[in-house]
Structure formats: structure tokens, C-alpha cells
Amino acid sequence: MEPRWYKIWPMWVPKTLEVDKPPSEHLREWARYTPDRTALSFYGRDITYSELNSMIDRLAWGLVELGLAKGDRVAIQMENCPQFVISYFATLRAGGVVVAVSPMFKAAEIEYELSDAGAEILIAADSLYPETEKVRSRTKLKAVVLTSMADFLPAEPILPFPEVTGKEKVAFIDTIGFMGLLEKSPDKPICNVDDLKTELAVLQYTGGTTGTPKGAMISHHALGCALLGTMYWWHDREDDVFLGIAPFFHAMGQVTLMGAPLVSGGQVVILSRFVPRVAASAIERYKVTFWVAATPMIIGLLGLPDVSHYDFTSLRCITTGGAAIPVELQKKLGEAAPRAVITEGYGLSETIVQGGAVTPLHQHRPGYVGIPGLASDIKIMDRQTGRELGPNEEGEIIIKSPSMMLGYWNKPEETQEMLRHGWLYTGDVGLMDEDGYVKLLGRTRELIKCSGYSVFPADVEDLLFKHPAVREAAVIGVADPYRGESVKAFVVLKDEHRGSVTEDDILDWSKENMAAYKRPRFIEFRQELPKSAAGKLLRRILAEEERQRSK
Image (cartoon, rainbow, N blue to C red; front, side, top):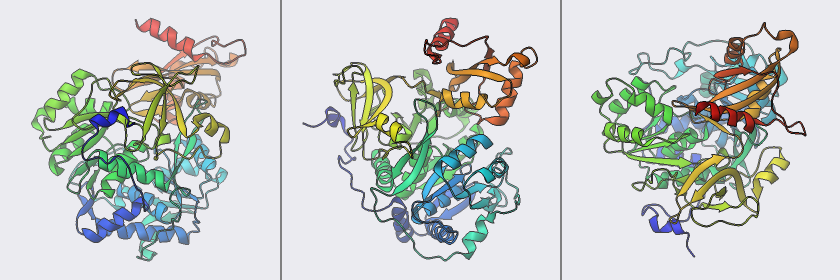
């Protein structure tokens, strides 16, 4: 019997999916078919498919020359830029595994991720390297390749470049220049991938029930399913223009605004950061057709006082994620971009985006995140009995998808907890209606969603414990009309610091030691924290207290 969502299945989307080559080889084909078509645009610097393909091959050979062997992990840390795209696909062609590190990470966060992945090569923006330099000796890094935004910026950018993003070249000892490595490497094809289903392409770091970041192991086959599935679902074409603002280190940006557009032969307009007026100008100048945006980006764009003066009629699709878009905001977005179809979606890093639920084009159902994606299946299960529930019954969302992870890197116990009998148990609560539309009702793993980013309480708590005055800490999410949720930390100070350390001191320290999206925005000092008889921290009590206050 066919799944019930097949009766509303988009006519242009196949129901089965074949992946017969690594994703980077689709890009190679476009370089052969349409060598002079623009693949990437970066503040006025255009890169053709032929140029991009050549630079990917050159860097892949350069990585091999640096000692990269099949399966070795390569960390990439930079904001959105052409170098990220080149590094990503070069690592895949060289047979390496991409570990995309947040450019917002501080030294302790970088050290953990690099050490956990066992990365031996880092390709990074020079402006971000000082944080890594602090901990490099405690990692397995053997080679560091640095690039500057200036390497690919035009002499006179046609769009304002963010002042906070470093664009002046900075030199560091014991590092290798990105451009020099490209220039000295051979320009010839390379693809060191043999088994699509068993060889890893990406370690996509996420968090889990404990909050400890874990590397979701994504094979070349799973990545190919995600990219091709996304291309089919959104009807991506070679004449589409994608606005590449969503971070490429994050699964959503990586798949929907970088990988799938290049697999489909389209053009990606890359902006290193979201600045509302620059984004509006880019949409108008390049006649952008497709954009994936977290809710705060939509709010920022529509908040421009002269937003009605911009021409957004080229947009055919705007997809949102990270936090639900209020109906009123959807209405305003529809007025600003009258030809755009507004859609939503739901997924996890463990399913590399396409494996979750997505809205069929032209069939958005307010309050629902969509139907199971291409070749995917979703069930709603009763957590107590393990029984599959019927339409509109609330239970745990479980997923089966070809774009699903193989497991967590070096974490067999966590893998067994998450993957059971071929299904991924998300820990999220939802329901599915008669047509297969999924509604997300809550997350049982205490996940906090800040501006589309996943924040895990234990991760922030572990970082807070590094403050010399903190004895205990508990973190919850609190409602934020702009970011969806913000982090609030309840802190118990050590006796000797009470009265001398203030809430602002902890907030200032957090700014220096945590990525912006995860740092606490509110601090509340407590004499003690609620715990169970076994001594387990009870965050739910703090969350309930916060909800009562906000009534």
C-alpha cells in the first residue's frame, strides 16, 4: 500500500532515487556542459563552473600532497565564501571527510570538535585562526591552510562587505597559504571515492540527550540523496539564482543553498553574513529566485523601513526553518515577494536536511512542517508501548531515510539509542494528519532553537563551568520574539565569589568564550538548583517556573 502522502505528491518529484556517483561529479559535468556559466558570485566576483571545478581539483591534489589519506578528516572553518565551497568539494574528491566547524566557536569549542573528529588538516579563514592557535598544540592538527576574504573579493565590491568580517590578509607562522597551494597543484581530475554507501563524506556535528556534540556520520550516498532529493523537491534548475546566506557549516545552508544548487547547475550568490539591506540589494540585483531563511532573517528583511522600494518579484520560493513563522509574518512576506511560494520544513543534522519533512510546493498547510521527503518515511510512535499511532495522535517522530546518518562518530552507545531497526528515533513529539502532513509539537531532548541554530543545555553548562566563580549551572530556553528562543542560565556561585561576581560579569565572560547564538542572554543567580533524589538536575522545573512568570 502506498503512503498516504503520495496522493499529494508533487508531479515533478520521483518517488525513488538513484545515486550513482559522488555529488562533486555532478558539478564536474556542469563544468563540461556549461563551462562559462556563473557558479558563484561573491560581492561582484563571479566564478564560472569551469573555474570552480578546476580550483576544486587543484585543492584536492594539494590536500593529497599534504598527506591526506582516504577517510582522514579535514576541518573547514570560515564564513560563507567561495573558499568554503572549494574546500568542501575538494575534501570530498580527495577522499577526505568534511568537518565543518562553526566560525563563531571559541577556543574550547574548537578544541573539542577538532579532537573528537581527529582532524589532521584545517582549512580556515585567517581572521578566525587566533582562537584555534590557542589550542592547536592540544589537537592532532598536522597542517593548517589559511585563506583571507581578500583572496576572492573584487577590488571594488558591488555590495557592501561586512566590516566585522576580516578582509585584510593576516600571516601566521607554521601555516600554508590557500592560494599558494592552489597555484602549485596540478589541474587534473581526481575523485578518490570508491564505495558511496560505506565511505564517509561529512561528520556533521550535532548534540544529543547529554548535550555533548556528536559527529553524525554522513556517507557519500546519503549526501547524494540529500542533494539530489533537494534538487528534485524544490524543482531546482540551471537558471535558478540562490541567495547563499544561511551558514554553509550548518546542514541547511550546506545542502539547500550550496550543494543542491551546484548539483542542479544554478548560480549561488554568496554573502558572508546576513545584513538586511545587503540581502535586499542582492535579491534585487541578481534577480534571486530561491532563498532559505531562518525566521530572524525574514523579520530583519521585512523590518527595513523602505522594504517596499525593493523589487523581490524574482523570488519563486522562500523556505523557512529553525522556528515557525507566524501567520501575520507570512502575510507580510507574501506582500513583499508576491510571486514566491512560502514553505517550511523539519529535519535534523542526523538526516542531513532532506530526510525529514518538507512542504510540497504550492501546498503549504499552516501549522505543519510538510510531508516526508523524497524516499523517506515518518511514523508517529507511542513512547510507552512502541505502537505506531494513527492520524492526529501525538507521539515520538521516527524517521527512515536514505539520507540518514550511519551513526555517531566513535559513540556506539549513543548510536544504538538513536538508531533502532533502521529507524532514527528523534526524541521529538509530533503528529501526522490524514494526508501525511507532520506537525512538530515539542522536543523531548530539551533542545533550544536560537535563530535556527540548535543549542543543547548541557553544552552551554559545560562551558559555564569553566568560569572560576561558577559552582553549578542549569540552562533552559526562554521565548524570544526575534530569535525564537534565547538561552537563560541559572547559576550557583562558589561561596568565595558571592557578592563580588555579578550577572553582567558572567554575561561578559560568555561573550568571550561562546559562540554568539548559544551564549546566555539572561543570568539568574540561585542558592541551589532543583535536583531529583538521585541528584539529577531537573531543568523542567526551572522551565516551568519561567513559564509561570511569563503568564
